[in-house]
Each structure stands twice: as structure tokens, then as C-alpha cells.
Image (cartoon, rainbow, N blue to C red; front, side, top):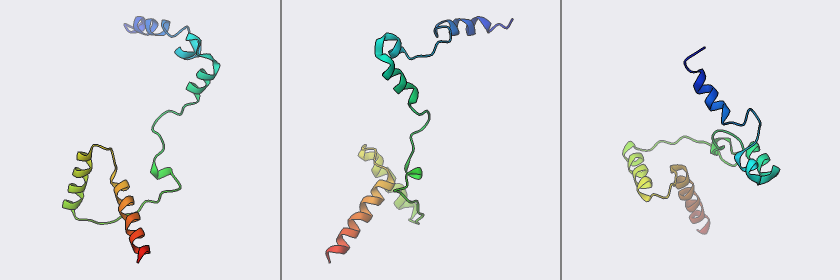
Amino acid sequence: MSKFDKLFDARGAGKGSGKKGTAAAKKGGGKAQAAEAESRRRGRPSGKRSDPDYVGFTTYIRKDTHHDVKLALLQEKEGRELSELVEELLTNWLKSKSKK
């Protein structure tokens, strides 16, 4: 018998003896809520890299410019990413080219 067996036994006892189900389902939340909770994907949400509407590209800018832009984005406190700023700037540039 391990010195940790009591900890594992105590932890397992609070889980309902191995029965599946969420706390919401046990409180009368119904089967739909339990199914929804179990169908949620684990881990990170998919990002732009796996989105077929986005394409990655490499560009070169000066270190100082990169640093200053990232700092300014952090100071905005809007949670905007550098890629979103680049998208906005390029879209506006395209719009200005089509007006001429």
C-alpha cells in the first residue's frame, strides 16, 4: 500500500463512483446540457493557421518598427493582433488604389 492511496481513494470518492455526467446534468440540467458539455473540443481553439480563409506570409520590417508597433498595440488594450493591423492597413491601401 502506497502512502498516496488514501489521497487517490478520497479523490475518487467525490466523483460519483465512476458514473459519467456533468454537474449540470446531475442538478437537473438535462441530457442536452450533458451532451453539449461532452461534445466540446478540448485544447486550444483553432486559429488563423488552420483557417482556409487566411494565408501566411513573411515580410521584413525594421526591428525598431516592429517593436514600436507591438508596443502600441499592447497599449491600445483592445487585444488587436499585429496580423489584424496589417490586414486593415493593406485593405485600406487597396481601397485607396481603386478610387484613383
